[in-house]
Length: 157
Image 1 (cartoon, rainbow, N blue to C red):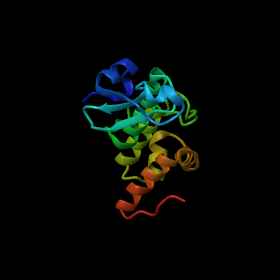
Image 2 (image 1 turned 45 degrees about the vertical axis):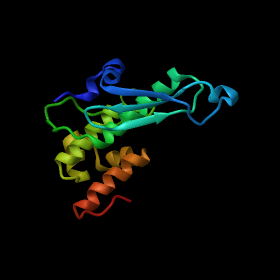
Image 3 (image 1 turned 180 degrees about the vertical axis):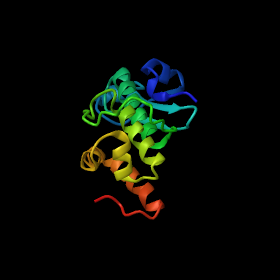
Image 4 (image 1 turned 90 degrees about the vertical axis):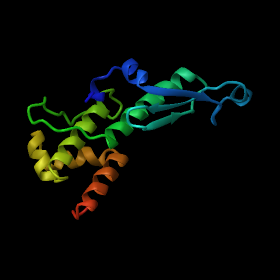
């Protein structure tokens, strides 16, 4: 199994179908003449991400790639190995490493049957710090609570 977290942007893009099209957003007349919006579809998983805010196709591709990494982190689980490097929860959401950290946290939660207390212990942090990390990202928070509800656990509040 390929660990998508270790792939460079170029390697991840090589696994994607890239579509450029005329999209909504700024640009006035330019918007009607150029295909600057970008949709990336990760072929192995079928997960896609879209960006069209910029007039620049390159900027939109960069934004779409960042969103794709975030979506893959939310949706693709990998087996957790306790021998992996420690997970640093003090990371900015703007960091390029954030999706990989988020994915690793979700992998630990999945391996610990979505128990925050057990997962925090496995990561080597406190429950409060793990909850703060989860709460900092609305989509991450929602994903964790969805899995907890499916298992009959109380959602995090």
